[in-house]
Length: 113
Image 1: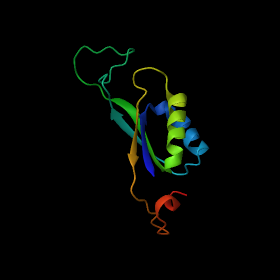
Image 2: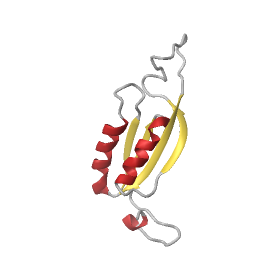
Image 3: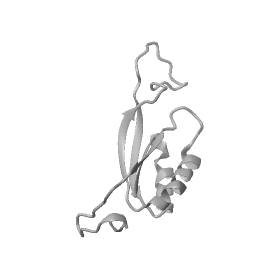
Image 4: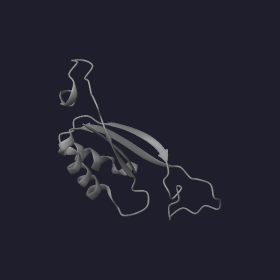
């Protein structure tokens, strides 16, 4: 199993939801976050007079998927949410050793379905 963490612009949420639903990923968690990358929060439309880091509004979406779905999901994320501009975000993929559905005690990939 893989945990996919997507950090991107808030307006990309509907595209991410469509991708995950299209791959039968039934569960996801979405959080509003603030952050910046190597651009330090600078966007060309905004002009700053200091060297301060500017934190920008982002969303973080995470889901856990079966290993064989991961590459297809990553390819779709890249093609759907990329604008080619600074601030598109990052995706992190993390190995998950175990999962358990609390209500039924189902384990592994059965806990995802």
